[in-house]
Length: 350
Image (cartoon, one colour):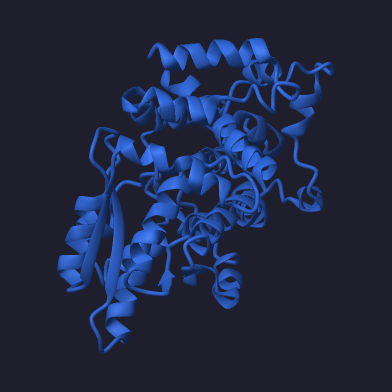
C-alpha cells in the first residue's frame, strides 16, 4: 500500500522522495524492511530504515505516558519510534492506512466473500465448495464457512479468549462480554446480508479504521511533532471504491486485486503481488530478552490498578512473564495492561 503511494509520489515529484521504514533485528518472520529497500532502490528514493531491538522496550513507558489516551495496539510503540526517526528529516509523511479496509486486504474478509459465492451455487455443489473454502485459510472464520453470518463474524474475530477477559476483570455479569462483541453501531442495522463483504468493509472503515488505526497513527506521529496523511482516504476515492463490486476486490483468492493490478504498472510484480503481512510487533521476543526492571515498570499495577483488575490473575500472568514461561498469547494479552498501567501512572504524576 505504502509502496504504491511512494511510486505515485516519485512520478509526480521533481525532487527525490524521502522514504522511511522500520525493521526488527530479532526474529518475527514479518520484517519487511528488505522489501522496502527494494522499492526504494527501484524508485530511486532517499531511503532510511530504523531497526528496533528489545532495548526499545525500555522507551515504552515514556512513549505510552505521553499519549492523550491509552492505546492497546502494540504497534503504537514502533509507530512512535519511526515517527521520531522520520521527524529528523521531514515534517509531513504520507502513509498507506485505509487501503485494506477499502479494497479487502485482510485475510479475515475472505470467508465472507466465499460464503457469498457458495450461496449462489446450486445446492448440490454447496457442500463440496464449502469444504474447499474451509481449506483456504486457518482460524475460526474459515472453519465456519458457509454459516458465517454478519452477526457471527464479530465474536469469531476477537483478539483474546473470553475466559481470559472474564478472569482479568472478575465480571459479575456472566454474559457481559458476549454482548459487547455484538456491534451496537446504527450502521449494523442497515447491513446488506446479500453483500456481506462490502457491508463489513463499510463498518470497519467507520469503526476499526477510524477508532483504532488512524487514531493510533495520528497519536503516535503527533507525539513526535510529525503529521501523517493517508491519501487512500480521500473522500472521492472512498466513495468510488465503496461502489466497486466485491469481485474486483478479492479475485483468484487474492485480496486487494484491483489495487494490485493498478500498482503492478508502477511497481515490480514481486512487490505488487506480495502476500499480505500485518505489521506485527515482536512483543514476545522483546519480553523474553528485555530487562527485569523495564518489565516491572510496565507491569507493576499494584499502586493504582489493583482495584480495577483481578489481582490474582494479574499476579500469575506477571510471574509467568518474569520467569520466561508465558506463552506468546499470554504476553500479547499483557500488553494492554502495560499500556494502561503506564498511562494511568503518568496521570497520577501530573
